[in-house]
Length: 164
Image (cartoon, rainbow, N blue to C red; front, side):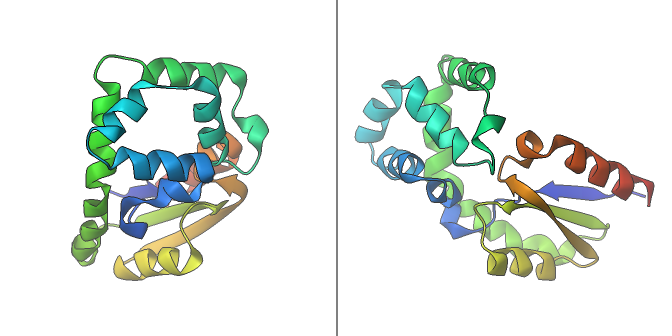
């Protein structure tokens, strides 16, 4: 039997969920949508700002270690990354449209959220209600990047769901 595990699905907010992380993320998302200005802004990468944005996605700021933040920044500096990220920001509103197809899902689905995910409780309930045979789990003390906040708890949920 095939199963699906959706971790903090991003089908809400018109694709602006990241903007809910903190003021730095809000600025990045909104400036990034503006042609020319977004391109200039994204080329001016700042490791401290990026680390602050990442910390807006976890329940415990210590989950974003200096090494992880440096690796994320280095990844973002790769050729073509800022263009890809701008494309993602400018088209993220289309992700909400995926909900139209949730009723077609025929396999068991586990939807996992971090307690402090950027999605709101009503958005979470709407997602799970739209998927036949879906079950929701919420991991306490975890944000959007719950694999950084609670990796063992997430791994245990995945293993348990895979066995059923």
